[in-house]
Amino acid sequence: MTDNQHVGDVHLEVLHQILGAATHEASAAMCRWTNGLITMTLDEVREIPLESVSVEYDFGMEMLTMVVLTLNGDIGGSMILCFDEENGRDLAASLLSSKQRGSGDWSPLERSALCETGNILGCAYLNALTRLMSVELVPSPPYFLQDYGASVLQQALMEQAAIDDQVMICRTRFTRGDQELNWNVFFVPNSQMRQMMEDALHIDA
Image (tube, rainbow, N blue to C red; front, side, top):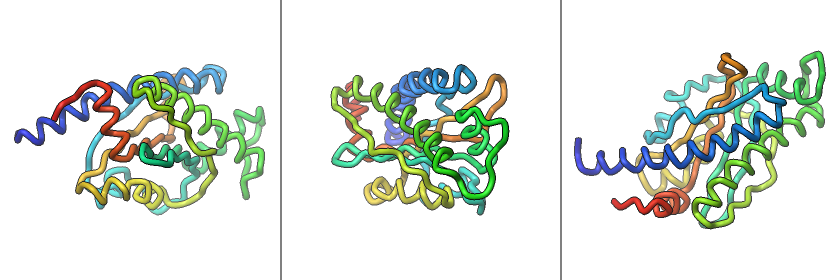
């Protein structure tokens, strides 16, 4: 292992700890929001080449339902909540206390339910990071999107890719009881936010 590889591994391990704590707080908020049904755990923090994103996360050619929040400014980034059609519809139906999953075009109420889920998760996650870095992080209002997952994620990663040939992605998974759900949250900090997280714990290169 080279010195640069070792430094990179140390930084990712530290960032995993930081983001794991933020995910724990978001999981508690998600549990309250779904009446104890859904929890979330940090799956991985990793660096990969931008061109490998589609292959690594196997988005396929299906359209995904997503809720996206962004942080604008020098300390920026994106949070992308992804569902396949079935799981997104199931969550919306559960939140709206509907006994039947919706179909066809998404109704305004269904969109609103998913956007509020993104808002609750994003605020809990970023509140934890705000306390860590002592910098207020205020996300944009969440917006509902149906698109190809690889395209949206690659767009969020473009700023990192302009600086380095490796991009950092944090992925969170969801469970209902013992069942893993086909949902994911991807958190993509820009380089300034990543540096501030490392500085907050005094990690030296």
